[in-house]
Length: 473
Image (cartoon, rainbow, N blue to C red; front, side):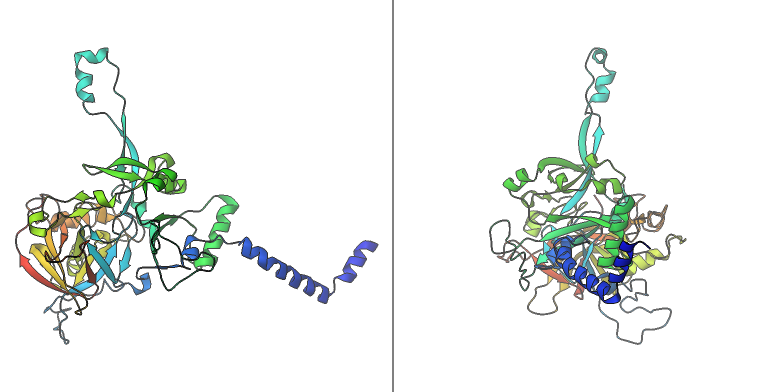
């Protein structure tokens, strides 16, 4: 051994090594605080001044949804019930702030003329190309040989689980200001309108892992921060309040039309907020994916089977709902349809969340809701008021429920096959199945509050005020 190595070895006794390690740890602590090895998530910062709303999955009111659901006065498993049957009630409540993505389960929700507060506020849309109107006729005319060909037209089309099943894996967290919290680092977060209130935020998360060593670090960080079962994710944050003209300009938003089915809707394009990785996750080109929302002052009016202004006192409106403000589902009806599906390894049970309802009710006979015309949810105490709804029409189903909401995997045939074969019940929707009911909220015409609103809670009893025929339009 060379002399200089011998000198170093002599110095490296146990106590020296121990003191060196202690010194290294002490000096590393402030470095890790300033430059944390695990990226700080937005939820970590929001948690200092906000609270995340919603019921955790392990406490969900649907955690036992596949158990027998005996209806009022019925028998379970062929044996008479020994306990007093429970009256029909609100079983669970759900909102979907980002259309066709993972929902949030609530214990209580505010009912507005547009439906439940925070429901279907945002949507994702894909930029597509189509031939201009009249191009086919122009191509067949005699002048087409000399005329310049008409250029294709770009347009934005709302994306749903019908087109991209992986949207089921996009999760959202809604963070509301909590007056009991105050961050020494962030302080109170003032609202954008300068009021004393604070902003609410929607955090959007989706599975994403970068390539190579960076992806390995992201996976390790996810497991260290959220548990061993966690996977790497990418997230972005959206304010729930509608931006001011100054914010629209500053953030690069634009007012653009977006198409939902056959409806062309004026909306705000907030595509600058969407990370390119989300488009890649969904199998799209980054420049062809954007995010939209409606101006609350310019929501879409609902007609068709909805009550008129003369009846309701206002004209029902929606954001990015398909047609009506709210969707109700009877859990007993879901179990009845489940008995008709052709089970295989990909679909053992029929999850009620496949139908993306806002209100799930229980304690009713199967399909009892098919002829409801008006219902009431009774308040549990005098502090709250009853909620009344016009049952406008049945929900005519497409193939969207074929997508498993937990995995984003689309089944080839079910439950669409069972719906078409056993639930073709509406003369206005031939060769299509129906499941659930579309609702419009009704408010007391003597109510002087503005805006009109009521509250609905899990556990509220249900009273059917009127029954009658339906014909989908």
